[in-house]
Amino acid sequence: AQAMLSPTDPQVVALGYHPDASKVDKTKFPKYAAPQACGNCALYQGGTAATGGCPLYPGKQVSIKGWCSAYNKKA
Ligand code: SF4
Image 1: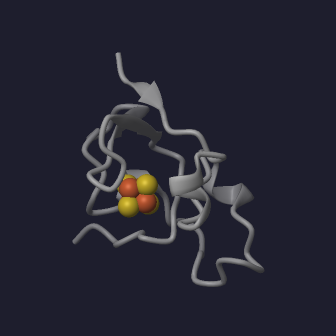
Image 2 (image 1 turned 135 degrees about the vertical axis):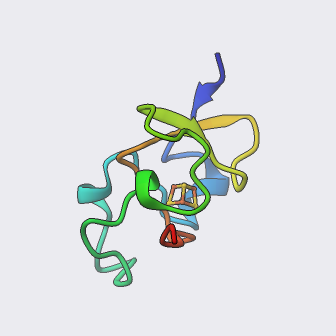
């Protein structure tokens, strides 16, 4: 299985990924608003699974409850 994306990965710090969207630093990422999460992001590849891929982070899994600043609402 692929490794989970770490929020401390240098590639990730800039984009603000956190595996728990409710814990996103809203002072750094004011665009975050509930109920945004990987699970309703257009880039999430996991469907309804708890974890899935994201094309921004090749080879890693993100949480369906995660979030990053590249969030793009699923149509
Ligand atoms: Fe999650 Fe979307 Fe960010 Fe990928 S782009 S980590 S699916 S919020």
